[in-house]
Image 1 (cartoon, rainbow, N blue to C red):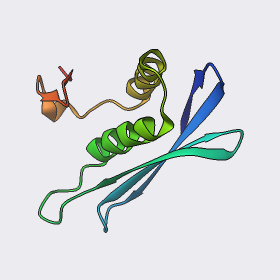
Image 2 (image 1 turned 180 degrees about the horizontal axis):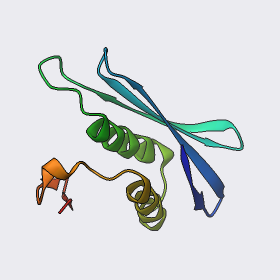
Image 3 (image 1 turned 45 degrees about the vertical axis):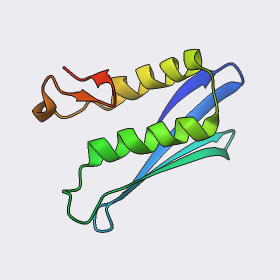
Image 4 (image 1 turned 90 degrees about the vertical axis):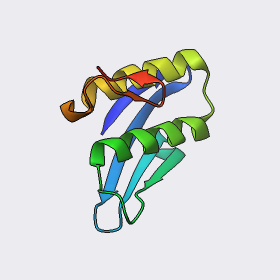
Length: 100
């Protein structure tokens, strides 16, 4: 769990993982009321990767939250301060974001 502040208040972010089913869920709440959810599903032929699942689920939850670019930047800075991508990705680009 981590949190970030928006103009309208503090948003708490929770992640749930089910490695057997290959699902990662990102739940966002304000004052204990759910405001957005994002899900990431791993294809049956892929290896489950918790870090990538968190990133995809977080992206989808932010899309559902419907916030402006400046607030998304704040959320992503907080996300990456807590959840680093594994070093095996090196200088690879993922969804247009440099990881190296």
